[in-house]
Length: 237
Ligand code: NAP
Image 1 (tube, protein in one colour):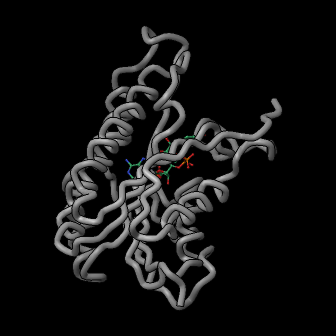
Image 2: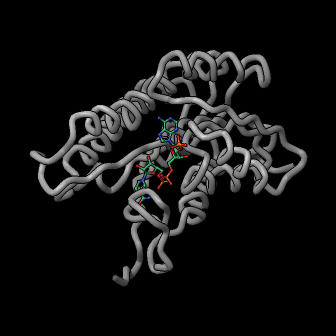
């Protein structure tokens, strides 16, 4: 029996990219999966890529920036699974502009509403179940943009700095309930996040990020890897 077998795991942004890779990897580890994004067809595609027919998979189309959608996710999880063990806050959007003066206000709102407020709402909603069980894991996908300055990406970077500040504080608040907060900070990953996937294999692939997440979750319960930076070893342009 695998260590993570049977653990109910919610993954936001599981329709493609990093979230999809995390779903496939955790499904292979035996986790039951709740897959979330706004596009049901992509979630169903992710579910079909999980190579484990012994687990339960639920796909829920929802916008994590809306509290009403989070309430629906919560109701669905309670009725179908009863509980949650692992929450992977991965969904995110990124828009870039030549300067801050060119940044659209709606795009500003969307980035903060998804990258930070959505992550907060999901955490707030599912934390009580973990506190009650005195156990849980929350994986927050931030970015190296949450540690560094990005020319043309001031707002995106601000959302990811916010995620790190939130996650560090959350970690201090909930470790006493045996809840681990694991913050992942990747640099460029080969997804369609900023356009099209490339054939650049010198940067991390989504499956590499998923491997790191699995390894962190597999650490003994008395060990929390609280923050992980992931860089390419030798990036080629
Ligand atoms: P991606 O391929 O664009 O996937 C993003 C996922 O989030 C999609 O499934 C998308 O589905 C979902 N999503 C977006 N808005 C949502 C909303 N309002 N409600 C629910 N789901 C939503 O991006 P990715 O590259 O895998 O990025 C995943 C995470 O890693 C993001 O937080 C990103 O900031 C972070 N990251 C990415 C990179 C990179 O280079 N790729 C580097 C560092 C950090 P729908 O649009 O269908 O809802």
